[in-house]
Image 1 (cartoon, protein in one colour):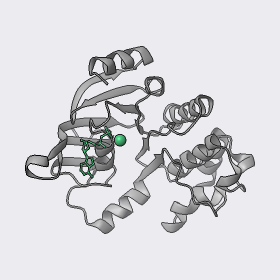
Image 2 (cartoon, helix red, strand yellow):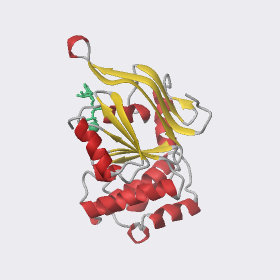
Image 3 (tube, rainbow, N blue to C red):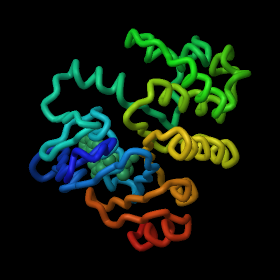
Image 4 (spheres, rainbow, N blue to C red):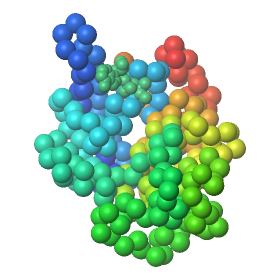
Length: 245
Ligand SMILES: Nc1ncnc2c1ncn2[C@@H]1O[C@H](COP(=O)(O)OP(=O)(O)O)[C@@H](O)[C@H]1O
Ligand SMILES: [Mg+2]
């Protein structure tokens, strides 16, 4: 696959096996996928199909057995732990189902912590854009415990985007939210792609969440079972039902 076209991330022929011998599980079985810059991608599939493993391998949180992962122009295979840690800190953003904010720090300090650890200063104009797009201006001095779930997840989105990463990985970002807060977070992730030019890869089992994205990838047994451009909730539901999910 062409690596000179500005893809945010590419997986080429990736295999990941857990365990050995009789109990070995091929969590990823020759997965090849490209994530163009400025695209919002949903990764879907039945439980155990390899969604989290794929995200962890793409994000440098786990290593592959064979195949290659590129983040931007950087090949992850063979990077030292120290360089992988730096790459994750500087070039990848994460949004988790459980928010993962530090409870004793204000929203603003949570958002800026990663940059500060990296010795980087936030770009003031970008900081304002992210904060205002997320509607967090009045919440910056609050601690996570003083915020609703939806507000906490918006803080987590701001934290993921503040360093202008190559790609944001979101694992079930609406899984702990009511449907209205979930819709707000999905709307923001879509805005961050359409208007702010970011790249987002989201793992979800929710066809409605997938309908916010530009492109759906369906995994089954560690392989790509289907790709659905501009997925509607109905198309996703139909495809998942076809897999017996
Ligand atoms: N750390 C691990 N050790 C052993 N098996 C694992 C591990 N992580 C995942 N698996 C197995 O790999 C397969 C894919 O898991 P996962 O990527 O978590 O799927 P999903 O996120 O789609 O539910 C499953 O069969 C799972 O049991
Ligand atoms: Mg999972």
